[in-house]
Length: 120
Image 1 (cartoon, rainbow, N blue to C red):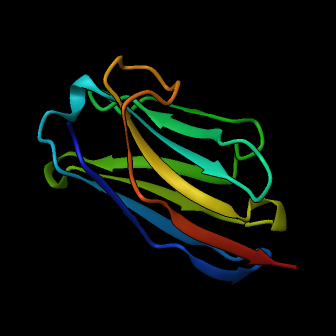
Image 2 (image 1 turned 180 degrees about the vertical axis):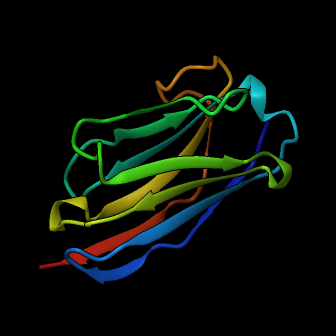
Image 3 (image 1 turned 135 degrees about the vertical axis):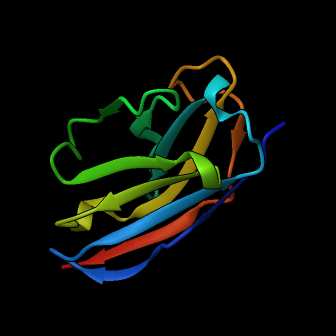
């Protein structure tokens, strides 16, 4: 099973930016649905963005569309989430997911998460 490790979280002010990274142990990520999720305190984990490894096509939750950009570096087996114009409601633990069914439904492997805190 693929192993994932997130990095790049931190404390920022509203309007600032962060870039998260998810390093994967597998070299065959094209068979997985690669996505970012987040979980705010007291809330369920929610989908943020997904990328098709083969052609780079992307899909976003409405709450982050236009502010967040998901990308990947196939040579480095790494997925990124560029987060711009951050808002306090973006505060959450961010997780990357490798879904062996190829979907963005959150099956399969998870990283340990990285905390993002946005102050107003």
